[in-house]
Image (cartoon, rainbow, N blue to C red; front, top):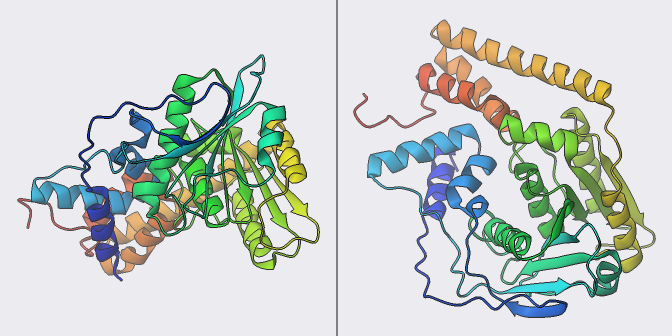
Length: 358
């Protein structure tokens, strides 16, 4: 499938228009668990335009923008019918002095439920748990799984006293992979990611780097914990690849927790407790190490942009094309403006012509 057809598909998905019938939300319980919670507010961070800005590459965003402009349409901001969306919300029996913690969980299954044994751990530690129904691996990521997680986060943050330092996104298996994408794109919401038996390398599709300001925040303040069974060889390999990529992109606050003699299974309560403890107790990032790594990353970025610019200036658009595409895939939001400018100037077919241009 070509770059253009991929983008056209994403554009079509982003234009889903939902007309919701008026409905009153059922208030989340003051304590205890409810699996039939509904919400009526659609937070700004869950709007399609914001999701696309944070989670699509610069070229993909520009292609969508041009196609929409050519058709005279705009992005429909909501892809979720809130009157039909259902969430499980579990509230601890006590509120910690600094406020509740929050875990928004992206499942691989479609039921809204807590993993076995987790409720008691979350209650003791003072965490609210929120997860959406019909948000499993068969659902669309950008137009369902991501906005549902963000809606859950926004609504719980609005309704409860939450400690912002203990707001995490997590998931299991395929849900964990989606949770990593959310953490990468929304470090201003989630301070940590609990990745249970599922991960991908960052800096490659689908885990492209977000805009530079957001990625800087991810590097400096997001804590990442992998929890994986020692017998789950595929997930262990993906964790290693993901962890290596984070090191290359100057993300150092990472920990791996093994579950002995376990295959592909949800973390047991004891390991959930260990993971929460790791997420909660911030390990200081070595600022000197971070600065040195960022300098190397900036040098790599500037060199790649310089090579592409030189080829475009020399009229060698065909030679510049793969370099621009590589920038869009691997450095993405760190060079968003330059990538779009290069694609527009190269004359190498990366962007559809804007209306009125030949």
